[in-house]
Image 1 (spheres, rainbow over the protein chains, first blue to last red):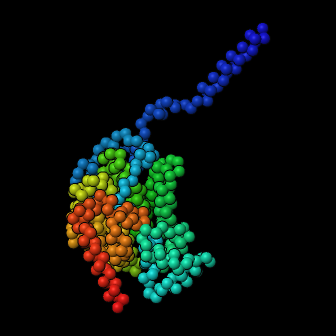
Image 2: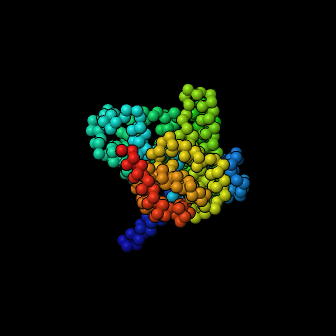
Image 3: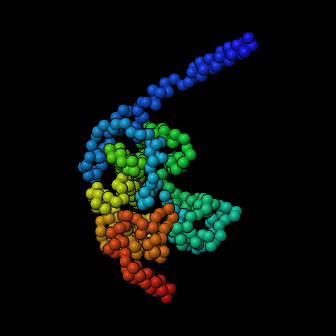
Length: 93
Length: 310
């Protein structure tokens, strides 16, 4: 009898623990991971890249045309992947 | 960034600034001061990294002798951003940079004091500038193009605001060195956006280089402040990219005049690589900077120095 009681108690406690664990799990965890990360350089509050004035000396090429930006990795990730080239020009303040 | 080397030179060039005077001025900022040997070695050696004590003292002295024309609050904000960008441990750094960027954009729209407008655009340009290598190294061409263009636009607006300020208030005119710096940043946007192996053939770089008169401006700035080895080094870089022998000679002589160490092409000045390792210097290394050429320049410099002594 004692064994049966202790088994019953154990199963009740484990059921309680399991249900409690699920209740505390963050909501929408999976869906959030699946959603596309926002553009890293996109200005806050806008869905399209900021329209910029043409720089007069800029040559016309594909980089100056406005186009869809698409899904890009976060800049946080990019910082990790980027390795500075040895001889880039430094900016002056 | 202006190095301690440059600041020491700029301070030392002031009228009546002997080494004794220099050390006395430093003593006013610190009880411990700096010993003469240390100061002199930083004056002579472009590769020397100053300790934080010396750096702080020189920065203070320099700021007092050559006050910055831009508002101090925005200069400090720029320093804060630099620290944020360079901090490797900061969690969610890019998000914080985006928040700062949003704040700066709002300020820019409200601002009507020209020097404040200029500095705000400069800082916004810096933020975009620092993203260029990230996009380049990850092959994100479209984002790279936009980012480069935004950086250039901000720097151009900064230049425009300075020019308008100088026209409207000639008594507090911002010096040519600041305009040079902003234009240097524009050229750097063009250069850094292209991988090193493709720079020599990049039409956008070459076109801007010629249209902006960068080489002539560099020579002019060097004539005023011959100790600016970063300007001479960049002059050499671009002279090599456009394959101009005479300008390569001009800038290597300028570098050798600052320190003969530069004639050793494996010399690494502070925070920079050796010329012999730089892809941008490839043409100059192959076609101009031969051992004979460097030996001739060294002899010329020695003779000049002898002539000055006698």
